[in-house]
Length: 168
Image (cartoon, rainbow, N blue to C red; front, side, top):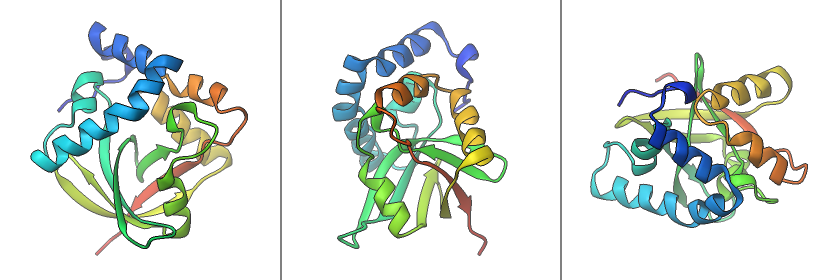
């Protein structure tokens, strides 16, 4: 699938991105989109996920180790492609609390990331300062809704990570 920055997405994809960034759209998306992506991944692993197809954003399946349970946990996340890996933002659609995968990565930074059917072993690094801004800018290339999420999060640091591929 060809990934397209915001300005290159078609009108339907841009409209969907705007809906998801809105408060009501985020409420629905938080409860529905990731479930659709998980179901699609189970039924057809390695294929384009619904959110990827609908909104033309880069999405990967991140598998972490549960911070408390120690069990594998898989979640679809929008990715910000970087020259040294992938950026991810723990926005949870602008919620006041971070998503579970945020705590999982902080407790166990080793994870796996499936992108376009290829599984990569990754090491998560929570970033601040210039690296945080680099992840933010890369994410905004595909999805400007992160600005609305930052405003709605009530001052919470959203949690910016770089997922570095590990070498075998």
